[in-house]
Amino acid sequence: MSAAPVSTRTTRSGRSTSRKRNRTIATVAVLAVLLVAMGLSTKVVGADSDLGAGPEAFSAEAWGAENFPTIQEGIAERAVPADELATAILADPTAAGAEYGVDAGTGPEISTTFTGTVGAGEAGIYPVTVEGVPSDILIRIQTGPAINGTDLRDATGTVEFGQFTNQIDYQDAASALNEQLKSTVLDGIDTTALEGQTVEVTGAFQLINPAGWLVTPSDLVVQ
Image (tube, rainbow, N blue to C red; front, side, top):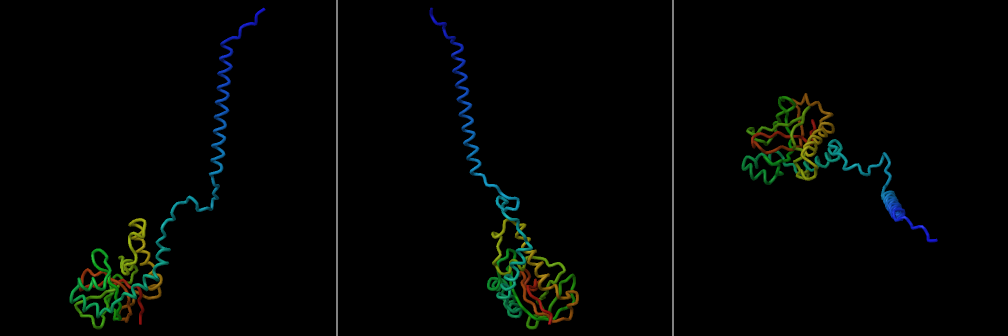
């Protein structure tokens, strides 16, 4: 008695099921390997960690506090007595700017120092009469409450745009130095009552008008 024939359909179905099972096992194995690899390469970071936080935002206030003493010292080292500077500027403004100044775009930034008598001011800006400086040169100082401009930032030539991320930070650095001037130098001075006082000033101005200097002080002492 001969054996019953094996169904071809049943055999093919078994082989198909076996192949599917093998593919499933292979897929699961690959996923397992990937999960293990991901686990090994993943570092758990605590909530208080700085890792992955990106570059720290620029703090103009902190930058100003750190750099103002250096800027102040640098201006003092570069400062030319006003009478000597006036003679040089009247003789040749371009040559004087090249010799004593720092390139600041629209005009050289020049550091100077002088002692003089304060005249009547307006909006925190006072004229100062300085012995040895011709009367056709008007020297003024700005004392706030608003300190404007970038004289302190640009006076030494050591602070450059490339040191900052963008133009906003660069401008904020100038404002921060002005704020440091107000809080560390001018805070103890009654800047509303300077008329008639003798002041000793070290500071910087941009040489645009040879006959008019608007000096931002880096140091100011009322004698």
